[in-house]
Image (cartoon, rainbow, N blue to C red):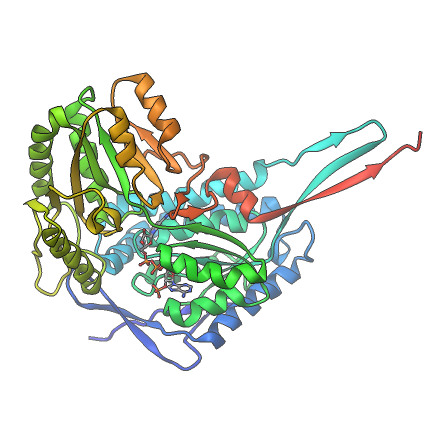
Length: 479
Ligand code: NDP
């Protein structure tokens, strides 16, 4: 059987890596090779930056965007790509499923429509935005909101197309050109997107894709002087490496990093809804979600019943989730379950591998009995593994919720309005859901506190990140 090759997209052309090296892309559900992707090196990365920079220069570096597209033209372009994606939704969903292992229907009903929404949302935002003007008697100030230039988007493997389009939409809407570096574990949908941009007639160099290992090309995409901003989603340690390179060069950066998010369950919640939501928060996408609720804090008076119900839900999820993204990642998850046993944890559901012997499946797992300060509870596992802890009273719950270096998201389940608002105010996380998890509106800020990130994405927050506002003051009278 011939194995397909996917390509980089640089300056509107599909290319191999300069030294013609390839990486095998493995389907984690079966262990089969999906395709081969370029193992790009610094030369390829610099070529992509040059293409993006030239595209930006072609726009004249002023109000016009990269490639000379004004806001209405950028809106049309993003809409055209969204339409093209809609026409090929099954193909794109299948590619996402093969790369990441996630069930096809999840990609078809979730990842791909959300990616299309991302582009449409920011396409409309491009033409809807206004900038302020301030009149002061003898002068008027107005604001020019202009593109930055070439920007690098570095994205992870858990929601490959969704997280790429979440950055790509605002970056292009604001008139920048882009170099995208997807994870080498899930490269295919970025390549399909590169092709779609060419098919809809995007200016050359507007959207470039460079495949390869982060440790081999990531640095080049951060430090090149023509890269004006870096938007990164991934692990906290990688974020720190990028920050170390970018800070002395004074580059604009945005970091969406890891989480160890609490689900806090009070006795006055809607129990049936809460059990279902807490399980979804922990096991959706096999727990490979930065937002996932992996620390479950439960009021002691309902603890025993809640734990039993959660264990039952975990068993049901076994048939609904896909594998972990790779066997290497599964080894990491297994090592945490072994650590949990050493730390005194009791596994009451899951805890083992299953499924295709060449795949990377791991059972939804519920662990109780751990001290809240131990490593299993404090470190991000990024798999279908949750720990449950009883609490006595509101202040104890809040203390446990905030006992973490991370601060991305949290969920509070209660029917007490006063308590809900108190927790919303005092939990140290960038996002708080009350009686839900991962209910998203694209306009609101998305991002973390503490070790979970710096900066916010979403609506105006993303538009602001991918642009620079300049003030012009006009004196019109000398009286
Ligand atoms: P990584 O941090 O390993 O990788 C993210 C991206 O960065 C990949 O494209 C990776 O390439 C690249 N990269 C790796 N090293 C470097 C480097 N030195 N310079 C520049 N780029 C580099 O994360 P994962 O892909 O493993 O994703 C899982 C992590 O991401 C989890 O910790 C999770 O919490 C976090 N995450 C956070 C989200 C958020 O919104 N806060 C959302 C999703 C995930 P390569 O794959 O080749 O290594």
